[in-house]
View 1 (cartoon, rainbow, N blue to C red):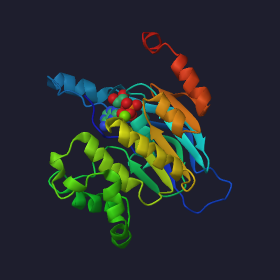
View 2 (view 1 turned 45 degrees about the vertical axis):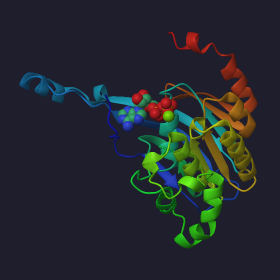
View 3 (view 1 turned 90 degrees about the vertical axis):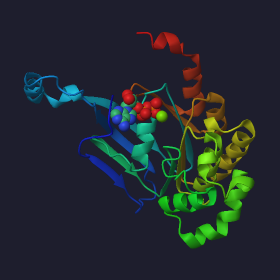
View 4 (view 1 turned 135 degrees about the vertical axis):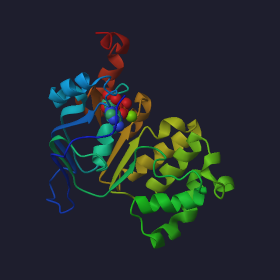
Length: 269
Ligand SMILES: Nc1ncnc2c1ncn2[C@@H]1O[C@H](COP(=O)(O)OP(=O)(O)O)[C@@H](O)[C@H]1O
Ligand SMILES: [Mg+2]
């Protein structure tokens, strides 16, 4: 069992004053660990012994030595097995987690759909949740009001929009989140396995929207297990495995290598 506690941050910079040639996202030797939730000591002796042991035995690196650079106009796919560190990386990009080692620099305003639904309140209606989520993303109420109808149309949830979202399926919540997060041309968009829960029709529509956003956004980062989806929307790919960068570069090269790997064999060691 694990908990969310992470130690004090090394450095996570969110910097909007731009040197024009500077990368939009820059990770330099980034690492982040989680503390493992220890079971309760069974005796006073065990408690005292534990206190003398080093902290390292209670921690697990979720990411280590991660280096990558994302430049303006690029769309990065992030791929890798479960537990590879993909969501942890997205949470750092959204400044929800800060690195314990190295420097993570993000130059621009981030709109992140990371822990899907974490910003939603299930007791509120779809419409109220759009407002709540927009506030969480820092979208001013006036701007949101002018976009409300468009958001509802894109989500295709007109019939359900005044119902509490506890009655929505996971896919319906994903549609709502995606519609809000992409409605206002964010500078940096982060999508963590959002589209895997939607139906095929919505995926195709979202794919189109992501592609059109690539012309206006600075960077898009999309986590997905679907190599075909990532081929369609990415210029570059980051392949994570067990907290490290296995490969990073042009999307076609990384995805070819990923598809060519005997995943079961590779994980059997
Ligand atoms: N809140 C947390 N507390 C403790 N450990 C965590 C937490 N979130 C993730 N981890 C650990 O960090 C590693 C990477 O997890 P994650 O980033 O969620 O992987 P992925 O998104 O690639 O499936 C895993 O070993 C996972 O158990
Ligand atoms: Mg994940």
